[in-house]
Length: 308
Ligand code: BG6
Image 1 (cartoon, rainbow, N blue to C red):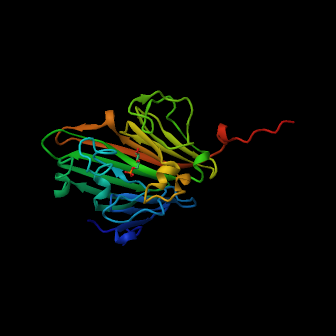
Image 2: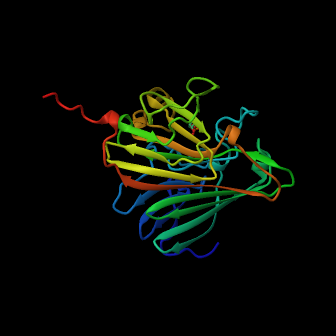
Image 3: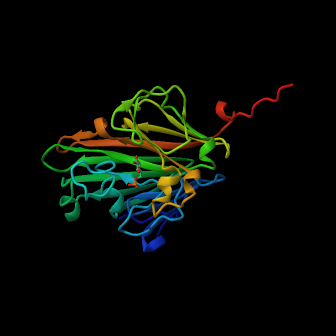
């Protein structure tokens, strides 16, 4: 590993896990090697953009509940092996630090995961290399490149399972997925037609949108007056998730009331959009988060005008 620039320090973080503390010219960030999980991105002058549960475990045995866990090489429950970990093994592995460097106003950190004895005995036993590039600046850029290092074609799913911090889920909406069909995991296995309006939250929400490759998505948090613009490349699926009260109460690493202040918007390649890679080939999926002030209240949340 190359020497680190002064903007990046490798320290012992929560639970004794190694963490990279990035303090760049335009933002600070924290990246745990455990799962290559970015747990903080805070542009200077802004509040933190990512949400991490106060009940999250910080241990090698469990994923971090918050930030940007990486789902790979499958999403959700493994279809064939009930004992396989939810969302794949990547968020449970310690990634290695390839290097870090300053690049103008940005700080670039690169991490890597390859197959090892444990992954070769897992439900996805293939040879692979995954390189994750995190560019910390006034925008946060995340680039996941997966290469097939084996001798047979492989198929995998992937997602950057981002937890965004919002002040109030009831006055938050996600736009950019209008008219896109989706699987509603709270209802059943069949896809349902897209909706004309942005996604608003009134109950448990767990949706996989397919064919969302061309659109940018915006998380608009009216109570904080902040929007996060999410752009993407090489990703055809978007997951929207909020567990709501009952499910949150049943999760030991999720505070009972914390569903009110988070929403997951996940850029990925899932189900019909799973990636097939021939030997030696690579696939790159990337996303960029950018803050913008919310100028007008969303139609639904506008105060009613007082009749004269
Ligand atoms: C979301 C899934 O991406 O992750 C949900 O769509 C799931 O179904 C959620 O409940 C959290 O998963 P986990 O494994 O981190 O508890």
